[in-house]
Image 1 (tube, rainbow, N blue to C red):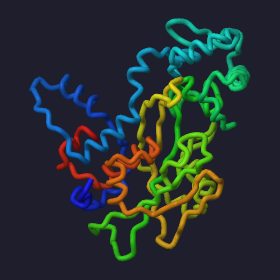
Image 2: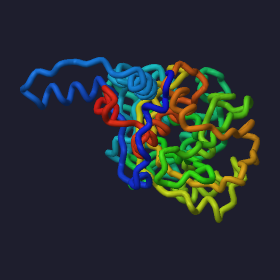
Image 3: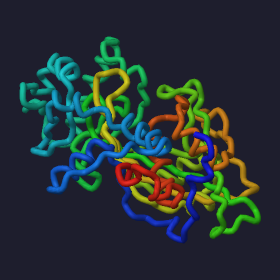
Image 4: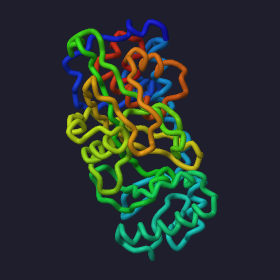
Length: 342
């Protein structure tokens, strides 16, 4: 992806925009346009840059075919998950906890009507599944509660072990922080974009070991709010003190539906995106063993790497960074395929 500089547009004053940004695949957008417009359209191949970015978006939205065979997970009438056939067959082995039919997966009548009772019953099932070794995703057990609910502000119907989230196809919520540094002498309105701190995940991580990540990112545990999560994760993962972490500004939401790498479930994730300006003399430092190292990347290098063939980026990290490219005006609308991307 030579000549990345020509793809960068002037950094505008709207860089801190907190508007919701959702990335759509070219296929879904084309479908929307063709159904809404009576006029035939001429297909143009996207530019190499946009084509590379679209590939990253599609990598995180590869669950459509699998989802067609899924069954809704229903609790108190709420649709809170999507269970694939292999997972449904495993849950069917526990009829005292789960009622599995061809149409849905529900809690068995005798489980109880409270979130606490359901959570206790499901925890026992997951413990047995983990011990049996039949469900590979449970090898990444985290001892972390994951709330199960129909939407972010809906009541919690159940709490499960985080590693089992894709097994039930529940919505997972998390926060990702773009950590920026504006070089001395480069004013906010100057042509030169800021640099971005990039983390290298520890090789001992249960998921995506050794891959490239945000300076700070983490899932929302049961009862945790996004702002609280950012401050906690900043300190735990990168030794960013609370007084700096509080400068992080919410910058929108990115969501995706991705097939779990084990093939047993779907990740239906919602990520709250934050932008955090860090002082030039501050260097993140690993604090909890989850990060191997941090490196400050020139933004052109970030663009070239994500638009190129690098296999080092954690998939959802690339997605959030693409959202940042668009929000901060680092990708010009003159790029062929821009509308398909955004």
